[in-house]
Image 1 (cartoon, rainbow, N blue to C red):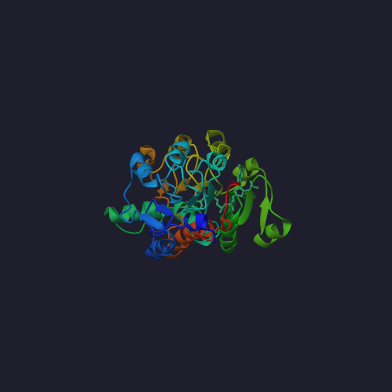
Image 2: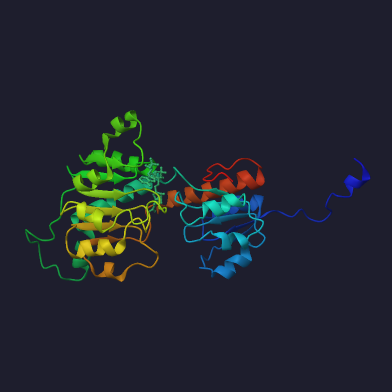
Amino acid sequence: MRLKEFSKIPTGPIKMKKVVITREVFSETIELLSTHFDIVANQQDLIFKRDELFDLISDAEGIQTATSDRVDDEFLDAAPLVKVIANTAVGYNNVDLEACSRRGVIVTNTPGVLDATVADYAIGLMISACRRIGEGERYVRSGQWKGMRFKQLLGVDVYGGTLGLLGFGRIGQEIAKRANGFGMRVLYHARSPVDPATEASLNASYVSKDKLLQSSDVVMLILPYSKETHHMIGENQLSQMKKHSVLVNIARGGIVDDKALINALKNQTLFAAGLDVYEGEPKLNPEFLELENVVLSPHIGSGSVSTRRAMAMTAANNLVSVLSHNQAPLNPVNRS
Ligand code: NAP
């Protein structure tokens, strides 16, 4: 080694790359990332103001984000060294992919590890909305129940009904498996049909969106939010649904025009809705709170202990793969 090169070797402690985890995660994720990086973790789960977060990420090379983080040009300007945004979710509509790609920033997500958990929850919301479980619970808790009445809180059957899945990817197909167990007929719509073998194994039929809306007893949304899917379910689509049908949105707020849905629920042109997500969440249209025929949940479709652990570790492993091992990301969603 020539002296010139030798003099380039740093003398003090080796500076590790910095990774910021914007929201609380499980301790094993902190432990994994700490062995590879200098980390800043938000284990108190503070809701940072944008400029507070921008200070933290100003020298970060990796950021483990949550769906509550809006990763846009302004965010990326504040993080000039960032190479990887590891979003702790399968959906990534909170990330401006085009802006990241333009800057060569890799974006990753957490597909696969949450499919069964979200599918279970979707079935739960469907049954709750059809059988008025939330309404019944409120009734009992409020002390109004004075005894069993034959026609009390009658719902609609799940068993034997037709389920229409808008979106038929990883999670949609898991929901179809479960619906088969309830003796439901399964229709689905996406931009393109899945292969015939998958259709046959899930006993599912591809139909147009209009046919799905008109024929289903339960319409369930499980597709990404994008410019293309913004308000995909509005007044026109809701008016095509059967009078006693149920809408379940387990996908993302903004796919449904919430105002139009509230009108349909108020006018009882729909029987009920089950919602895990809202336009502009965590705010939600206060009119939802006044309605008995809607089941409201706080975006917890993937919220089981083991699945949230797996999601956080998947996001962390993407950071390790790129920033520590100089390898390709495990779950890339853009071509940076
Ligand atoms: P996926 O495997 O990518 O499946 C997406 C499905 O949507 C595919 O069938 C796709 O088919 C269809 N699709 C995409 N764009 C469409 C469009 N413009 N019109 C009609 N269909 C369209 O995704 P996944 O893992 O099942 O997750 C789906 C979504 O669920 C995620 O993006 C996320 O937002 C949401 N999610 C919510 C929770 C929660 O906690 N509530 C948890 C997990 C996921 P084509 O490409 O052929 O159109």
